[in-house]
Image (cartoon, rainbow, N blue to C red; front, side, top):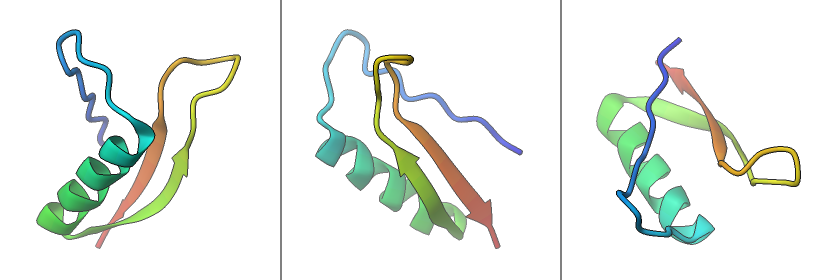
Length: 53
């Protein structure tokens, strides 16, 4: 399992922008997006699960 963190250095990214980045990275590394979990009250980040092929 690999963890990649996106740190926009003080910028706020919309969920749509994050999704665009995730799908672009997945295509680039030959993976598919399994889930994209939105932030909620318990956490302030977007969790993504990719499956490498």
